[in-house]
Image (cartoon, rainbow over all chains, first blue to last red; front, side, top):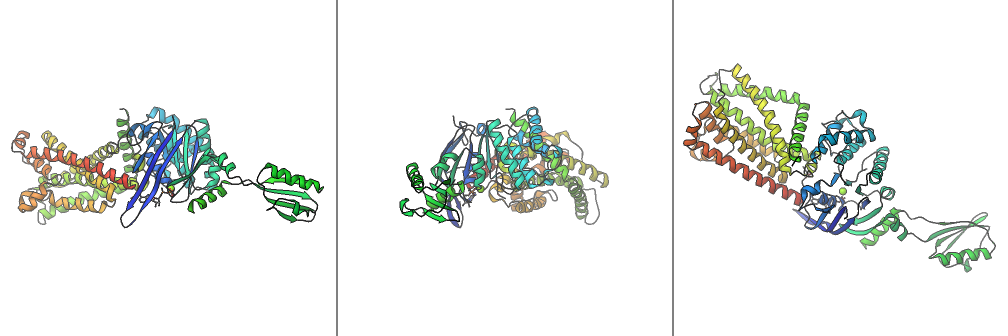
Length: 313
Length: 262
Ligand SMILES: Nc1ncnc2c1ncn2[C@@H]1O[C@H](COP(=O)(O)OP(=O)(O)O)[C@@H](O)[C@H]1O
Ligand SMILES: [Mg+2]
């Protein structure tokens, strides 16, 4: 059974005085257990709306959400026990309660008894370096510490699924790093399914097993990070040879030559291995030593921009 | 289901801790309430404080305070939770939100009962007025509270949809002080106003409670003259309508995606 199953999820917002907004359009996704799933997209793409429909706080116009087999609309109570979430926004916990009181509160809200909650709260507070300040009001904390409390609160009921909407937005570098490391540990050690939204590609690349890219409410890609990277791998090579090379005519078209003092750099698209070998043979025939051959690694950033540009056409 | 008592305890605990944070404000509000009633007494006695008629007014005043609590609390709590970003979390409990909110209602009732009791004791000490504690007052009191809770849920449903209900609800609670008959019994009103007044929360409760506490009527008497029956029916209707309105408001907010907005 999949941890998260979205079937044809659709939501249009109607606001008086403005055109309807198609926030999410016919979105289907299956996420197996234990996966860290990145939900990427520019601002206004529909990420938050999708998460809120998964949490049951926004009712979809059509389609359904199942969390470990429990339909969020029809089997609400059981579905609510399957996940913990931190929605976007700077304030998601009680500023007037201490860190400890917040954790206990959000645990009980999910229906978990104190005797299970206390050890869990202790552990989470210690792991996130909040232990010393557990009895201080959250309003006295830095933004980074508040976000740690919010994430811990979402984990208090030890839910199999964790939904995080822009979890590192507005955090300083160090706290963002802690949150990332923590999310990655969670999935590995506690075998949790994590869905996180972000528009920071580096984070998705570092953390996620799989990413989906959403734009204007529609899914435009859904692949493993590796697949996505290799799919869009540009066959762009940079070859450095010793000495001066001027046999351009013998090379395939499209490569550029850049003569240097004692070496030459040849770069450009080389479609496949055969062509690459052909280029190398050609250089060898000239009797030039090959100093290095490098293939440019595409970043998710490039892929993302490419996909969006294609989608907008 | 074990989750329900746990969640109720959770809300009561949270409300108490947060109230304790605001204890200084609360003390000032309390003083205001004492002074306010002293002024009312002067006003009623045309410049002097007369004990005649005062118990009836004090009783009305205390019940009105419960109305203020029920109405303003529901709207300020809901919009407060929305602005703190925790309202959506409450909607992710396995326990339905209206049930979670029963915890707020109970916590508030307990807090206000302490305040009202203290206020009653102080006013009885400083003013020439007494209010006998009649056990017979309990049934009409409970019925009045049930009606109020229903009314509170109705306000809650409106708050979920229209967000800025706080100003309207504070207007409503102020108007209620004059319309529910706590200062001037409603039978002194013009007939049309009396008809409106009787359908407002606490009006009928105050009528029945005055008969029992101030006039010393028995429960059988107020039952037989129909005033208690009317109170019971009215409270039940408030409760059902309030619950329905709350659920409708909730659904509209979820459909519009505005549950967490404020
Ligand atoms: N409650 C709402 N009412 C009207 N429009 C909304 C509402 N919530 C979101 N939207 C609109 O829906 C679109 C998607 O928003 P959102 O899901 O928040 O995107 P993201 O999280 O990817 O930035 C945006 O155009 C946004 O303005
Ligand atoms: Mg968003």
